[in-house]
Length: 252
Image 1 (cartoon, rainbow, N blue to C red):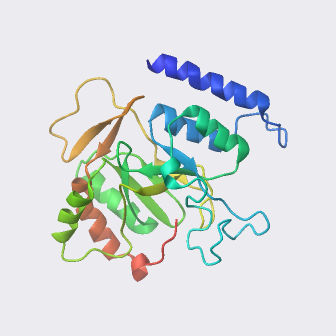
Image 2: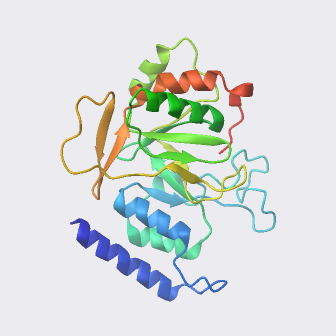
């Protein structure tokens, strides 16, 4: 099945390359389309194009809100509910909007995420690594990092946070009905989104039951390792609490 999906994906890429005008002599499939197709077909993550930046002012969001706090890095048209894993739909979107950011709709069968200021996240990863916890993908922008975790319900998240004495405003949760900006999109704070830790498929065989708080997320295309949110939340809360200024401004 994986080989069949791979052949279909390659045919779509070849078709797109033959139809797409060569801009600047690059001659290859756009990195954003490639990333969107990989997310949609390999990992079965529903994606959609972000609104992007204004064509007349590269620092302002293309949406109607003049005070948009996440310029370019949010859904608008299409809306979040349009997120899809259909490679034909994904190819059509980025054929028409080749510079659009790549957004993943979080929750459901897709990963959820927890994001926090970049410096605090780096410290949290050191602590989690020292604990021997096997982490999943980590998305990084110049200002914030996001740890992808196994899907969680709002009820379960509420129970975890209710037990904490304090949950910093700099710590944000991307669950059902949320979204996350993915590499190699442009970050609204400047620079590019990148993988601090790339998605990796599980090796064949059962997951180690002794690994604390970790589980395998089964997607149609591949098995992806994702930790449970309960396994990482303590380290992330502690790291966010010490972040300078509390990181209260929403920035990606």
